[in-house]
Length: 124
Image (cartoon, rainbow, N blue to C red; front, top):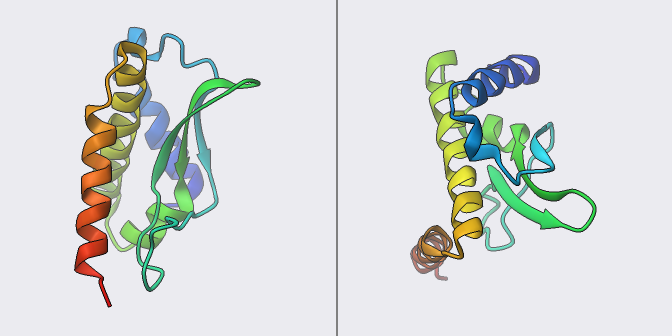
């Protein structure tokens, strides 16, 4: 299993590989938290939030990535595969950031569709 320190190193490498302009207006940065977070839509405790794009008065725009959620979903993966999943989460949340700056909501709409598909699949 990838430790939180290893995940933080991976995340730093992934961030350094991206054009720095992507991070404009991301005043609160990218935060890797040890916590896990269940989706409020989770049925049978099986839907985790891996990352979130947030805005707030004190931190401004920022990204949270939940190491605990990643481990619960992808902890069985090797280092390279785990890093690829981490990269997907980072890119997903950065897309939310860029879309928010542009006044777009395409990814937000797609996320809502995926939640609806999940809920339909888990109807009682």
